[in-house]
Length: 456
Image 1 (tube, one colour):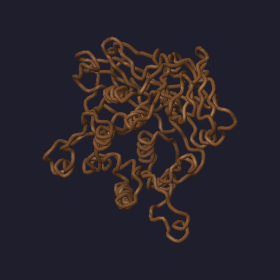
Image 2 (cartoon, rainbow, N blue to C red):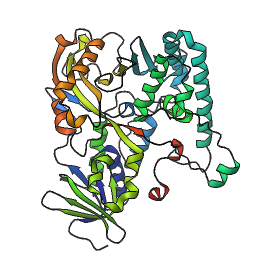
Image 3 (spheres, rainbow, N blue to C red):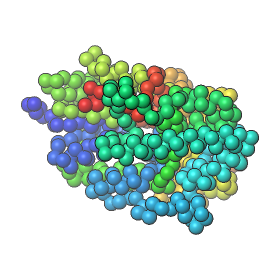
């Protein structure tokens, strides 16, 4: 391809962690990479000595040490993984080490600690669901069997490195039945109490970032068991982002700030072309990596991109996650409350309008995130994607605060500030990535949702 003034091999559209990792790997392998960052968008927020980072799922707050180790090795970063993590499970369950709580699920009449050590989690749900203990044990035993099958598939010589995504050949589907159960979680949970069903559903939503009753047993096994197996508490993604950015620039990668993308054209002959509305700039590349929510940039794409756009119909945003930042005093936090929790106020109502909250408290006595004696509280609430355009956040905060006051007694008297302004300024931007999605069609999650041609 003949290069124009703004031409390069690869463009990464968006400044998210995934795109930054991809761009750094490509730059490390001697490709020319340009990362386009939205002018004015802030992935974190600092105010009055507090620092807040909005999040889309619990996995952004609880990273696996093995994943951190892989990222560190691939990008030549300092290792963040705990080398002594392996083998701790047995010691903790035998009482030699203190249990590690991952997060907490709060129902109207229950408060359940979720631990990376199964022995402690079992004690929790036995206490909170005493009338259906045998039924619940059977549910988890079935997940255990499914998890072992998944791990067995992953241990095979030709297993996909991106497990748990798995491709099965046409002939295998005909002559060899898939050993992994395909039963959906909706019917499987139908005989349980409303409280236990919501307990499981909130965990799946919080980890998977998808809202659906069609999750398979294998998906539940991976999320509820594998994801909980090894986790690094209180990991700061902003530190990781800064380290990767430094490596990206060191490998010759470039970063440029832009405003809105006005038009995206994909051509086999000329490559990808991005037209911007600032200074009528045009960028061209052989390859384009979208590190932005597809529904936010779909209006920039022409008719030729129908093959890509159809996937925004299959995986659609259902809720926008609205971050609210509070500076609160340490003494207002109830005894036993964890630093990361999900709470539902009313089991009969939808998740929106403050009924479901995802909360993250900064670590105790961490003065890099909050002044002494205080904690930074990030609250993610949900609003219908269509409702966002018509609702003022000032009117919306009533339901959220009502829920918060039920969790934190006397909170009103111990708040330094409540910040809605970050959300008002940043949610409308195309870089904003915090949405809860729903699958509009049934699919086998292990086969992925990316079309085969696009994948290749």
